[in-house]
Image (tube, rainbow, N blue to C red; front, top):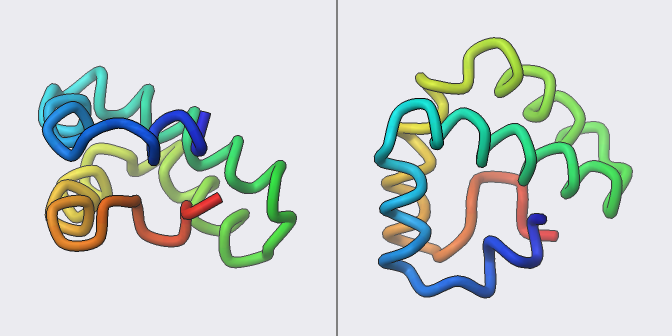
Length: 76
């Protein structure tokens, strides 16, 4: 899922992250798939945080995606 998200155009990424409930679902799927791919402790921490506080981190990821075309610590 992380690879699929990163292959999308920036417009699609931003639209997915702007819609509140969709944002949370996309964040969870991308974060956990990035963790399964990388097995990084930092990616695990962000996956757990997003699971419980996804809406707040999602707004930060919107800005991060605008700048770097991937989510924070989810460039799998």
